[in-house]
Length: 472
Ligand code: SF4
Ligand code: SF4
Image (cartoon, rainbow, N blue to C red):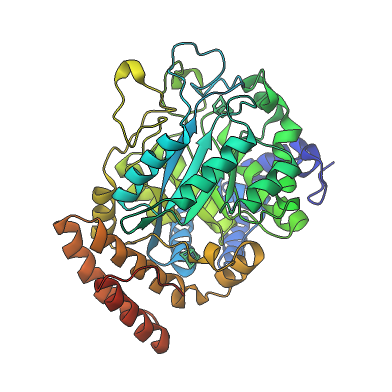
C-alpha cells in the first residue's frame, strides 16, 4: 500500500503506485488538456507530483515539449540564476565487499588495483585539489568494515579540513559512503560533513536485488531507508540519485520523485541535491550488458522534468557526461558540476599507469578545472566555489527557506562572485582571468540590494589585495 509517510521502503516507494503512474502517463502522453493543466500547476514553481511529472516526461506533443523545456529553464533561472557550483570527487579507498554488477570495485573483480589512501596520501591529494582551486569535495569510498571503517572516514574528514596550503582550503566535505546506522550518521554529522550522498541506483526492488547479489548493499530496504536514518541523526543536507541505464528510466524517474516527496513529508526536508549519473564503461563492466541505456535526448528531458518536479533541489552532473551533454543540461536545470575530476584512488597527486588503474569509471569530460571554468564563463555562467550556507549553519530547512524565498540573488550571487574572484586571483590562467574579471564587473550590477552590492564590491577589492574568505 502506498504511503508517503511510511517508514518502510516498500510503502513510500510503492511498486504498485509507480506502475499505476506509468500507466496513467502512457494513457495521457498525447492528452493536451491533462498536460496543459500540469504545466499550469508547474508554472507556479512549487513542484508537481511524481504522477504529474511522469506525464510530462512521456509527453509526445511537440509544442508542449518545447514549453516543458522553456519552463525548466525559467525555474532554473528563478532559483539558481546563472551560477554553477563547482566540486570534485575524492576517492579514499576502492576496497569493497559488495557485489554491485555495474561497478568495477565489486569484490570479485580481482584485476583492478586496490588502494586505500593513508592520511599522508590524503594530504597530498587535497593539496593537489587545492592547487587546482577546489573548495568543495565529495568523498567516495567503497564499503568495507575492515579496510574502510567509519573511524577511517572520520579521521580522513578531519585531515581534509585541517589542511591549509597557500590560500587553499577545503570548506565543505560532502560524503558518499554506504548506507549505515543512525549512530554512524551521528558521527559523520559531528565531523562536520556537508551533504550526505547516497545513490539508490534503482528503485525497482527486483532489479536492485539482481544488481546487488551479495554484500550488505543487497538489502533493498536498509539501503532505501538510509536517508531517513541519516535525517534522524541530524544530517539535513541529503543527496539522492539513480544510475540511469540500470533499469527502466521511467520507473526510476518516478521512484526518485517519490523519494523526494517522502523525504519532505516524513523528514521535513526534501533532497538537497539530486544526481543524474548514467552508466559508463569501466574495468570489468560493459555498459552494453545493461540494455536500459538512455539517449542524450531522453537524458535532457529527464533533467528538465526533474527540475520542474523538484524546483528547489540542487542538481548534479559529473564528468561521466561529455562536454556537449553537460552544456545541454546546464540550461535545463543542472546547478552543480565537477571539474578536473579523477575517479581513481590517489589520481590527483599522481598520474596512474594502465597497470595501476584504480578508476571507478571512464571520464567523458577530461578538461582541467581551469578549462571548465573558462568554458562556463564563455557560456555566460558564473562558476561558484561558494560554501557559505554550510558554514553559516544554513542547512536543511533553513537552507530551503532561503532558497524558496527567492532572496538567493542577494546572497548566492555575491558569494559566487567573491569565490570566483578568489579563484581568479589564486589559480586561473591569464585567459580565464581576463574573461572572469569582466564577468564579475557585469554580474555585480545584477545584485538588486544596493547595500549588498556595495559590500560585495568592497569585499572583491579586499580579495584583490590578498584577503580571503568573505561571505554573506
Ligand atoms: Fe562498492 Fe559502491 Fe562500487 Fe557497489 S557501487 S561495488 S558499494 S564501491
Ligand atoms: Fe549555495 Fe548557500 Fe552559497 Fe548560495 S549561499 S551558493 S545556496 S552555499
